[in-house]
Length: 157
Image (cartoon, rainbow, N blue to C red):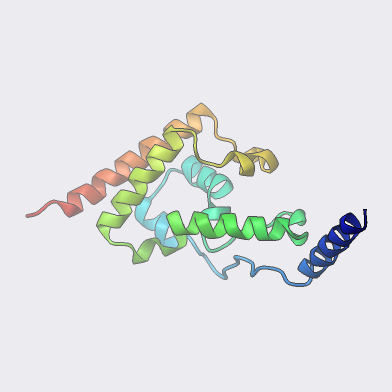
């Protein structure tokens, strides 16, 4: 019993200490997706779906829920956002080559078609981010049309 109390007390101290050392938040100033939107020109509906279902984890600006202020949840969310941005960051679109843009759109299509995006963990707490079948189709069609433009750019002359 004494060992259990020591372990419990140690965990409590660690949990309290974690509240004072939070991960850096993913917040950008200005229009962080402007270059992406101008270049890819999604329909208004698709643009809204991307904003509500993708940007929190795949851009330089996240709208954090209230529970992000509680550790260890804040660390878990920071890790998810970092991983999401590693795979695709709409805020860095202007820095990608045409080949990379084409590849990122190809991956986006695969993930949306397969139902892997948005993550289930995200849609549990963000019901508005759940994609309907119509929204999935609209995103996929837009991404395929946009990919065709990059494929033309990649064709040797």
